Length: 175
Image (tube, rainbow, N blue to C red; front, top):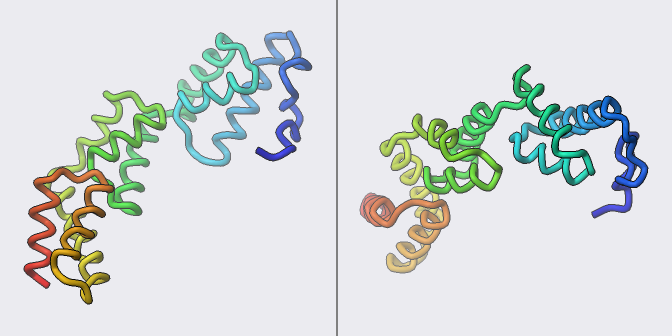
């Protein structure tokens, strides 16, 4: 962590924090807006940040409730965005996406709703595209080595054994 932790107004250590509830709310709003200005965040991430900054829980809850009311904090939209971007950029499976959302503080019900749009066919198509890229990169290797590398890569992306075996065999048979 850099030495500039308290570099902005409103970022003072807890010992110098005002006791006025209105001032605390204003400070909490500033922190939340600054965090959202950098990137989208879940309510849980924002709450943790506020508590780290010494904002009392009751104030943090009140501020975050208001941000949810006006639509600036929306875990459902965050979950949908996370599913879309992580599938496109990293090719993650449904299981890995659920784990990723859980680590970001998205509730299981919200995560399940965001994953409804990802069908088994979509998941297998993504796995197939990833496996084809890996197969192309390993053409100069023997088949058992290629199988292990493709299977390991798909496993790290969260794909189940049935998908890994089926996709790996298909890609190598095509090749």
